[in-house]
Image 1 (tube, rainbow, N blue to C red):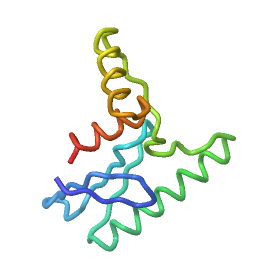
Image 2: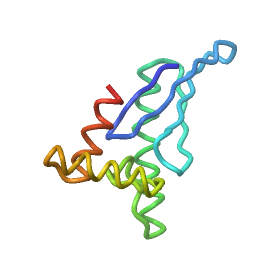
Image 3: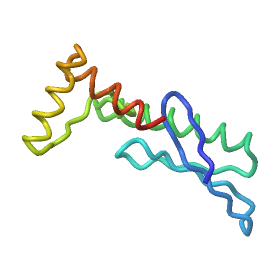
Image 4: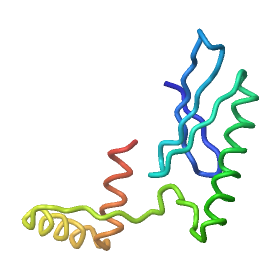
Length: 109
């Protein structure tokens, strides 16, 4: 599957050969944002227009557009694992956040 990014938003792209269209769907928000185009250039333009429409729609409702991946997330762990990770961070002379971020970055490649 192909992806496309714009302003931090990530969309998956699928080709519908029968219809002669490319379909895009933003995957890193809870809001449903889709777009389509007949060529890659059309698709890029439609993606930008969808994001602009989304921003305007939110403004009309007095809400902020959902920003993809704020950098904050909550993880629930077994208390013993939490203790082990905190100990490993302390041993590495890192904060828990820094240690977890570094470890996850290595795992993600």
